[in-house]
Image (cartoon, rainbow, N blue to C red):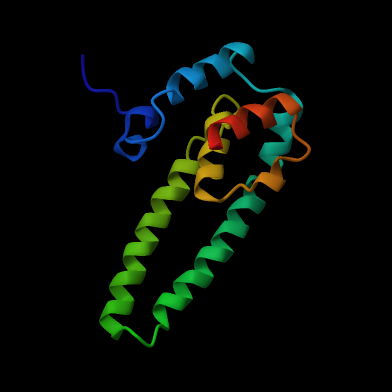
Length: 137
Protein backbone atom coordinates (compact mmCIF):
# COMPACT_ATOMS: atom_id res chain seq x y z
CA UNK A 1 0.00 0.00 0.00
CA UNK A 2 1.27 3.51 -0.85
CA UNK A 3 1.79 6.47 1.38
CA UNK A 4 -1.27 8.53 2.20
CA UNK A 5 -1.27 11.97 0.57
CA UNK A 6 -4.30 13.46 2.33
CA UNK A 7 -4.18 16.82 4.13
CA UNK A 8 -4.12 15.16 7.57
CA UNK A 9 -0.83 13.43 6.83
CA UNK A 10 0.83 16.17 4.81
CA UNK A 11 3.96 17.93 6.03
CA UNK A 12 1.97 21.10 6.68
CA UNK A 13 0.20 19.37 9.54
CA UNK A 14 3.32 18.01 11.23
CA UNK A 15 3.59 19.38 14.74
CA UNK A 16 -0.13 20.02 15.13
CA UNK A 17 -2.22 18.22 17.67
CA UNK A 18 -2.02 14.44 17.26
CA UNK A 19 -5.67 14.31 18.24
CA UNK A 20 -6.71 16.29 15.18
CA UNK A 21 -7.66 13.38 12.90
CA UNK A 22 -9.57 11.46 15.62
CA UNK A 23 -11.39 14.68 16.58
CA UNK A 24 -12.36 15.23 12.97
CA UNK A 25 -13.70 11.67 12.76
CA UNK A 26 -15.71 12.17 15.96
CA UNK A 27 -17.23 15.32 14.47
CA UNK A 28 -18.11 13.51 11.24
CA UNK A 29 -19.68 10.65 13.20
CA UNK A 30 -21.85 13.05 15.22
CA UNK A 31 -22.88 14.93 12.08
CA UNK A 32 -23.53 11.74 10.07
CA UNK A 33 -20.75 12.73 7.67
CA UNK A 34 -22.06 16.15 6.70
CA UNK A 35 -22.96 19.47 8.30
CA UNK A 36 -26.43 20.87 8.78
CA UNK A 37 -28.00 22.29 5.65
CA UNK A 38 -28.24 25.78 7.19
CA UNK A 39 -24.52 25.74 8.09
CA UNK A 40 -23.56 24.56 4.60
CA UNK A 41 -25.65 27.26 2.90
CA UNK A 42 -24.19 29.98 5.12
CA UNK A 43 -20.64 28.78 4.53
CA UNK A 44 -21.12 28.34 0.78
CA UNK A 45 -22.51 31.87 0.49
CA UNK A 46 -19.67 33.49 2.41
CA UNK A 47 -16.62 31.76 0.88
CA UNK A 48 -16.07 34.30 -1.90
CA UNK A 49 -16.31 37.22 0.56
CA UNK A 50 -13.85 35.49 2.91
CA UNK A 51 -11.43 34.94 0.05
CA UNK A 52 -11.68 38.54 -1.14
CA UNK A 53 -11.20 39.96 2.36
CA UNK A 54 -8.19 37.71 2.91
CA UNK A 55 -6.62 38.63 -0.42
CA UNK A 56 -7.20 42.33 0.20
CA UNK A 57 -5.18 42.03 3.42
CA UNK A 58 -2.46 39.96 1.74
CA UNK A 59 -2.24 42.27 -1.28
CA UNK A 60 -1.69 45.19 1.08
CA UNK A 61 1.15 43.24 2.75
CA UNK A 62 2.64 42.43 -0.67
CA UNK A 63 2.62 46.11 -1.62
CA UNK A 64 4.55 46.76 1.59
CA UNK A 65 7.20 44.23 0.56
CA UNK A 66 7.41 45.66 -2.97
CA UNK A 67 7.85 49.21 -1.71
CA UNK A 68 10.12 48.49 1.26
CA UNK A 69 12.92 51.08 1.28
CA UNK A 70 15.13 48.67 3.25
CA UNK A 71 15.40 46.21 0.35
CA UNK A 72 16.90 46.29 -3.09
CA UNK A 73 14.55 45.87 -6.06
CA UNK A 74 15.86 42.31 -6.44
CA UNK A 75 15.10 41.51 -2.80
CA UNK A 76 11.68 43.10 -3.14
CA UNK A 77 10.91 40.93 -6.16
CA UNK A 78 12.10 37.62 -4.69
CA UNK A 79 10.57 38.24 -1.26
CA UNK A 80 7.24 39.09 -2.88
CA UNK A 81 7.37 36.02 -5.11
CA UNK A 82 8.12 33.77 -2.13
CA UNK A 83 5.26 35.26 -0.15
CA UNK A 84 2.87 34.88 -3.10
CA UNK A 85 3.79 31.21 -3.47
CA UNK A 86 3.09 30.69 0.22
CA UNK A 87 -0.27 32.44 -0.08
CA UNK A 88 -1.09 30.31 -3.12
CA UNK A 89 -0.61 27.17 -1.00
CA UNK A 90 -2.83 28.61 1.73
CA UNK A 91 -5.57 29.41 -0.78
CA UNK A 92 -5.34 25.92 -2.22
CA UNK A 93 -5.51 24.36 1.25
CA UNK A 94 -8.58 26.38 2.18
CA UNK A 95 -10.51 26.46 -1.07
CA UNK A 96 -9.63 23.52 -3.31
CA UNK A 97 -11.74 20.98 -1.44
CA UNK A 98 -14.75 23.24 -1.24
CA UNK A 99 -17.67 20.85 -0.75
CA UNK A 100 -20.27 20.11 1.86
CA UNK A 101 -18.46 17.00 3.05
CA UNK A 102 -15.20 18.98 3.45
CA UNK A 103 -16.78 22.11 4.93
CA UNK A 104 -15.61 21.48 8.49
CA UNK A 105 -12.01 20.87 7.42
CA UNK A 106 -12.05 23.94 5.18
CA UNK A 107 -13.35 26.05 8.06
CA UNK A 108 -10.62 24.80 10.40
CA UNK A 109 -7.97 25.64 7.83
CA UNK A 110 -9.51 29.06 7.19
CA UNK A 111 -9.53 29.79 10.91
CA UNK A 112 -5.91 28.71 11.33
CA UNK A 113 -4.75 30.84 8.40
CA UNK A 114 -6.87 33.85 9.36
CA UNK A 115 -9.17 33.76 6.36
CA UNK A 116 -12.13 33.00 8.64
CA UNK A 117 -12.35 35.02 11.85
CA UNK A 118 -14.11 34.05 15.07
CA UNK A 119 -16.71 36.76 14.53
CA UNK A 120 -17.55 35.12 11.18
CA UNK A 121 -18.84 32.10 13.09
CA UNK A 122 -21.88 33.99 14.31
CA UNK A 123 -24.98 32.65 12.62
CA UNK A 124 -23.72 29.09 12.39
CA UNK A 125 -25.24 26.40 14.61
CA UNK A 126 -23.96 26.36 18.19
CA UNK A 127 -22.77 22.79 17.70
CA UNK A 128 -20.57 23.78 14.75
CA UNK A 129 -19.27 26.86 16.57
CA UNK A 130 -18.34 24.75 19.61
CA UNK A 131 -16.58 22.13 17.48
CA UNK A 132 -14.61 24.75 15.55
CA UNK A 133 -13.52 26.70 18.62
CA UNK A 134 -12.32 23.46 20.24
CA UNK A 135 -9.92 23.00 17.32
CA UNK A 136 -8.44 26.49 17.50
CA UNK A 137 -7.93 26.70 21.26
